[in-house]
Amino acid sequence: MDKRWIAILIIMIIGIGCGYFISQHSTTIGHAIADVSKSTVSLPYGFSVGPTDETSLGLENRNTKEKIYIDDLGSQNIAKKRFKSELKEISQSGNIKILDNDTIDTPSGLKVYLAHYTDSDKAQLKNQSIAYYYTHGHTFYTKLTGFSDIGNMDEKLIFISDSLQPDYKKPQDPPEEKSESELSVDINDVRS
Image (cartoon, rainbow, N blue to C red; front, top):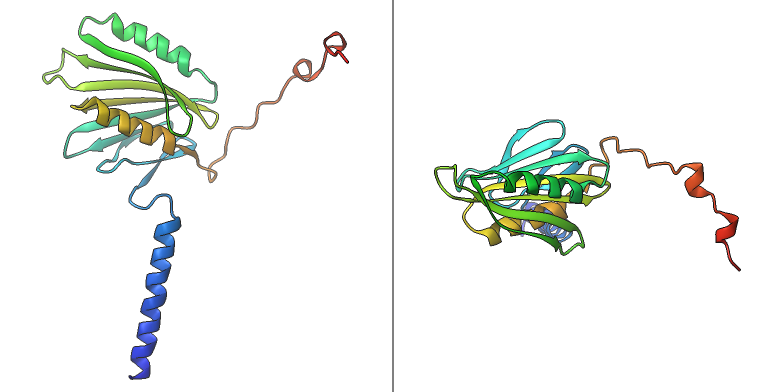
């Protein structure tokens, strides 16, 4: 065998080995990543990035017309409060039929407040969902529209909420400093 063929064979073996190593150790193979404020999220299969701004991200599946909207509401844990408020607001609308509302725990232990509903004002009755959750020091709101299957909608919601990660390339929120009164201990509360 010619030395050139041996060199090419060695380079091919090294390339295949490196490709295998990357595919086995990468957490994002097969999924694109997009920014949501100070975080990143993996896109569900078939979805591409739509409208975005400083704190929100829109995703769309062009084949099915399903849409997902994600918004970073800030660093306070207001998920449950905002969920109750919006649930009350949409339940008072005459066009919206709430199918259910629930609190679920994702596989990573994240608590998600969600409601499924349909809007009879739309030409086609498709399932919609709102969800609020608190992760990595931020409250997030996610709205899913245009889904025909609630199970598929929940699958996408869980995938998104569990894939949200802080983007350490961007400045993060400073840790909240505890006031002196929170750090001090009342001598009457200490018992030996």
